[in-house]
Length: 479
Ligand code: GLU
Image (cartoon, rainbow, N blue to C red; front, side, top):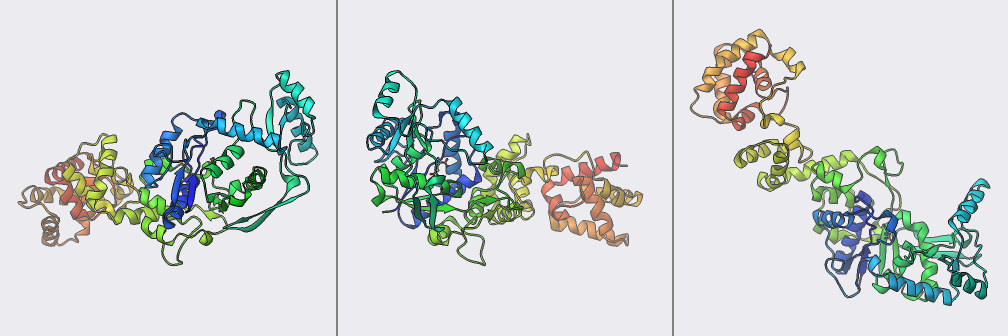
């Protein structure tokens, strides 16, 4: 039975890298008819952010990633929030001390700072100097009785090579001399990530640990902990997912653009587009296809098909994918997402009208927000006019022609794009001018810009009285 977990720390917004991790766990669980667990890793009390858990749950729901066990679902192995499990970790820390696999350390933070600085100054990676590693039993007793605060550290064996298999990377080895005597329990009695994470993975019977590459260097510590607790025989399998990169191949960072799932959501990306895009950051079942439904991803997902090399987070591809997803939906499907956006901006249009705008713009937008921001002239008459188009198209002749055409439009009995086109073309013919001489100034006068959807469709959607009043306004005000 496959059991995987997504184990975020609620430290703020949800990074797209976390979304990918959550997604791969979900795909793997569903592909194997396994169990997907959500576990909240909130033992670092200094990094907690109010509301982060709620935000995380909302984001997962938005993305369509579901869990079988977790803080809201409950389950056999709960509680699923680590701060509610501190007693469990303390007991294992005690066990590790009594088996001589861990030791109490009484060093002050001032001393640790000095050690760190000295090591850095001599060009070594900063590590604990193992000052308390060989205190005698009596020395330890004495300090504890004197009430000196202490942490518990892992006694990393010296001179060993720690090797484990990674389902993405194959065998990975670390020399134990590069591994710090990791703090397992802090002086406030809270465990560190490392202790809580492996205790829970074990107790929750996790079979596969699927997480980002940034955790690879923690894994030898975890392997040592599994050994120290005699759990090595049923240690989970590891799969570390490739780093996400900026287009210049540096590590994906907020500095170069958005990284929070919430940002993409507020910018009008569809969840299925973002999920499809994130799924392909390190995995693609085929060389020729890019659009996959969640069902198709579940059907084809295999950990051994995940790439080792970093995956570039290409914004253009995301935009393309989002517009593909938008196009695949009907105006009715898009309506419920676009309506609140229009309301947010204070636009008061009827549902029927909004549906028509959506239908007309679907082919031309990249995001849901584009429906309201890219073509604001659907919602309010233009008062500013594109300078380039004005200079080119708003000639004295054009004004005369539009003034002449206006009553024909006003008096038309039918208002649809076919009828409007007929009026405009018939008029152009009667005056022996090209229809373009009318189309460009017409567009400018009703929309304020030089390009957009087909003009006659646009006029139809805007409606006769709006069109007539906009043309009249332009004739009067636009010089
Ligand atoms: N709590 C860790 C995080 O925030 C979990 C890493 C892991 O999956 O082991 O990503």
